[in-house]
Each structure stands twice: as structure tokens, then as C-alpha cells.
Length: 394
Image (cartoon, rainbow, N blue to C red; front, side, top):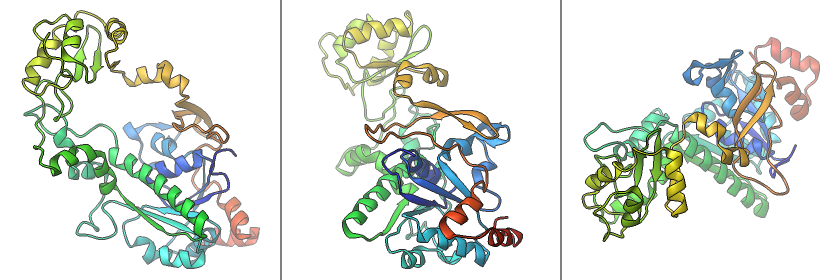
């Protein structure tokens, strides 16, 4: 094993995206992730984005569960709860994303586990938090995105609000889990004691609106979306996407007069601002006329040479073959026992002395049950056989 978190044991009760994304990051960094699955398996074993299964394995599950070991437990059986407590006694971290109160009702909530293991860090991730009027509501990515107002900032003026095409709430919460647990691990190194860490989807995604809410809460206007395609309601020309003869090019904040000159559009020679709000839609539409006669590659050569902030709009295929993606090693491959060669996103953070890497494929359901019982609880083969006969593992 490699990675800076070697030796850290994380007991992972999470399913779907937010929790598994976080624990996969821990696993990539070398932590030992024990994935506790219900008898039927993680929810994403039975759901696949675009219904894509590779030799029966869900691409959604494979995407968020490498570098983990799997044990199945029926936590409604007392014996299953006892096994979970056995694992928790030797764990450094527990991560769960049940609705508030579920772990307590099962008999393995924070108070119980902290009493068994005072050094334990217990991270609970929920939809809306552990208290408040929405605590019993279902928390799911689309619902959270709607609650944060992000769709009202996206899309053209007069059109329907647009929800971004990726799971922003889940992924942002996963990142908050990671840094929250790491901070608690550092605190434990100083004091010897664990603590509870709470993360929720709603608060996590709200932090992505830090700049917009700062403006609004301090006297700024509400958002006014652009009718010409400027993607940010608070940003002016020339910011945005421009159609070329074979695709699109993205242009950041640049001096309008310089940019217009390069695009071959006159009339803006005296405007040096890089964020023109007045008549921004008319200006952007005017500038767009200059881009349709050259390819994206031709425009990149012209604009980058002039130090204009710009980049091509890539497709997923373009991302796959982009040389910078390759240089950053952001697409990795590993062998899975049933799905074969699986490709996925790599590790974005690099460590000079303890590099992150894929050491385990996403596990088969319950693949490591017997192994973990022996390693963490000293169970005998007969005891394991009896638990299996009793249906504790399904």
C-alpha cells in the first residue's frame, strides 16, 4: 500500500455518491476502507448511469468504490450489529450517510461507538443537517441544487432555470467530508481523542455560492441572466462561449478593445474594460460574428499568442484524449475480477513521497467478509460459518 493515509482504517457505511466519493479519495490516499454493505449491496450496484453495466457490474458503483474491501451485514440482526461494533473498535474513522437517527436506532450511533473507541472520528453526512425543519426530508442532488438557487443563475434570460449536468451537491459534500475528517485526524494527533464531524449536502453546495451570496447579502442586485449566452448573471462582455466554424471556444475576462480587434470587430477601440455590463448582450452578439469563419484551433493560436484567456470547449471524447489530462495522469485503469479492464478518473492531488494509487478494484459484494472478520475480530471458521448460516451476511 502507498499514500499518506497508510495505516488509517475507515469503516464506511455509505452508499450512493457523496459518501463513497469521499471514502474512495481516502482509499486512493492509502487508507484501509472497509465498506459495510447491506445484504442487497450498495444502492449503486443496482443503478448505473445510462444503465451501463460492464459484465454485470454497475459503472456507477465501479466509479466510486475502488480501493475498498467489502463486507455484507444485516444490521437489523443483533449479530450484525455486534460485528459492526467489533470493526469500529479498531477503526480510526466511521463515515455514514443515513438519514439522521438511523444509526442511533440501529444501536451503532456516535455515542455508542465513541464509548467503545474514544479515538474514533465519526462523520455523519446527511441531506440537510442533523437538526432543523428539513431534517426528515429526502436529500438528493437535484433537490439540493434547486434549494441552493444554482439553477436560477444558469441558462439564458427568459428561459427555464437549468440544472448543471453533474452531481454538484454530492461531489461537493464528498470533498467536505474529506477535509473535515482530515482536520479531525490532526486534532486527534494533538489530543488523543476523536470527535463527531457533521456534513450535509445543502450546506456543502451553498459554499459554492460564496461570491454570489456575498454580493447579494451586501446590497448587490439579484441575478439577471444573459440573453446572449454569457454564462454568469453577474459577468459582462466579452466573457462567454463563442461558436467557431467547427466547435466552440471559451473566452474569459479580457480587455474588450484588444479582444474585439483580434476578432476583427470594430467599434470598441476605446473600451478597455474586461467586464462590460452595459449592453453586454448586444456586445457579445456583435463579437460572435467574428468567430464563425475560423476553426477553434485557428482561434486558439491567434488568441493565446496575444495572451487572451481562452480555451476550447471539449467533448467527453476530447477530455479523454487531451494531452494535459494525460500529463496529469487523470485517467487510470485497473483490472476487475468480473468487469475486466476498468478505466476511470485518476487522483488529482499528487504527493512526492507517498503517491496515491489504485491498489484494489471496486470490490464484489461481500468479497472480503471472512477476511475482515478474521483480521479485525479473530473469528474462527466455525463462527463465520454460523453467522453465514444465520443470515447475518445475507
